[in-house]
Length: 122
Image (cartoon, rainbow, N blue to C red):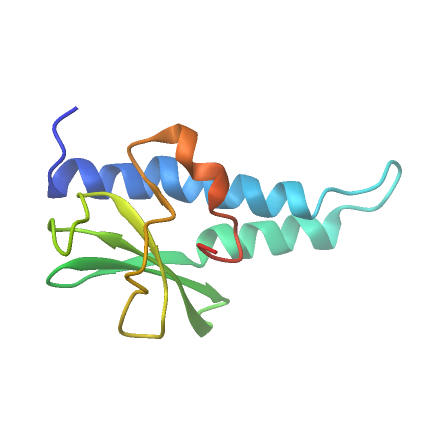
């Protein structure tokens, strides 16, 4: 697969976001017979609250609830920089910058995604 900005954004919107929603769903798995109304609403809010903002070198992955209380989930490398490849997943060091000590996975490498959960790229 050719790794460029277009395929990266497509992978984020499909594969990466689906993985995060699945991680949230697995974490909040209901007990047998339990009412799932609130759980289903929270899952929907989590899925709808995932977004991204493209920067110069990274794409910031943002999570929010009902349009408020935004947090940075992770950063995805947009342009090869500092020894990283396009699609590498980096932990958020803060609102505007990733932690660049090591990658946590890559959105193009499905085997690496379990290292990233709905709570962040630990």
